[in-house]
Length: 178
Image (cartoon, rainbow, N blue to C red):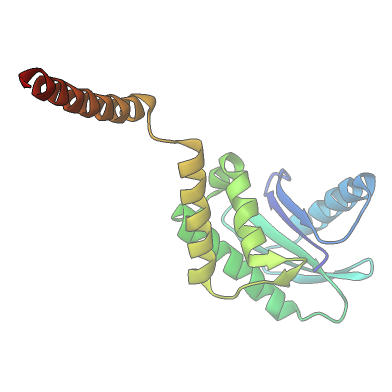
């Protein structure tokens, strides 16, 4: 796979992942041209098309188009399955994913895509293991960004000091008795 694009019916690019080195100017030109072609197609038309030296495979889910560019020798049906699996992963994570989920949580969408695809190839086909890796990353992020509150940590330190002082007072009282 050369790249994956997610764009809305209005032609707004929501996510793009490039797996080959391409100049920024060329990327913009390719995205604009490809969005025009895909958006101009009728809903009943085939989801495969030949474009330049690539095959384009796309699928519309609700208001988003998921579009992949693959090599001439790659299988279009497998690419459709890759798109569908990515949508399933997004659905499981966000709970019925919508365009707003992608807009406001784009970093999670990229992370899910990176857990699923690496270098344009499927890294892991198991939804469970991909979602488990994402869940673990979420937990790690939560722990590192939200340590226990300062009053709790101070409270533990104060409690420890209180116990030490109490023991010192007991030792002092015993010493005074002698």
